[in-house]
Image (tube, rainbow, N blue to C red):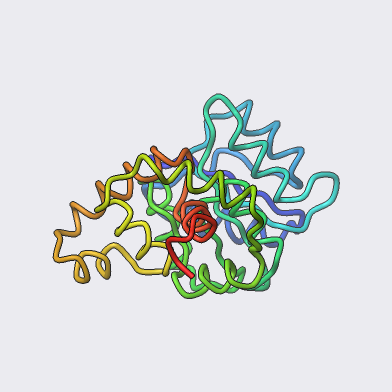
Length: 216
């Protein structure tokens, strides 16, 4: 059973998402929160596997909440909710540790799919949208580049190949086809890459790849 939390200051949005999630036999909504501060309190009081978090909220916004949630002793996975797919706040939320983002008008079946994917340890990031976010809002400076190269250094040559394609926005299936590997092997490589780099999702890995010069 996936234990979920819905975080949004709009009561109707909370109700709609809660009804949707509770309609899935494998998901249970164990908490709701009206803003980021309330979300942290609820996640501390309840074990939460996946939190759907709005970006713009009073008291504590979704970006700060994401960072605080991911810093908890038992951190939930976080899916950011937003109205705009190229909102700079979404980029900030992903950089803060969110595992994906969804538009609020996303098809209900895709929202459920995202919850299941994220709960299983994957990221729900549309490749092209993720790349556009990186291109639009990420700017490299020399200290970032030096740190990125240091963190990328321990990766094997094959892992660097995988990381470069991941940063390009390729899916695991795309990477497997390009490099002539099994998709399960790519998945293992991605898991080791994230661990070695000390990041929690593919977007953060892509940022380091950009800073470290693996991709233009």
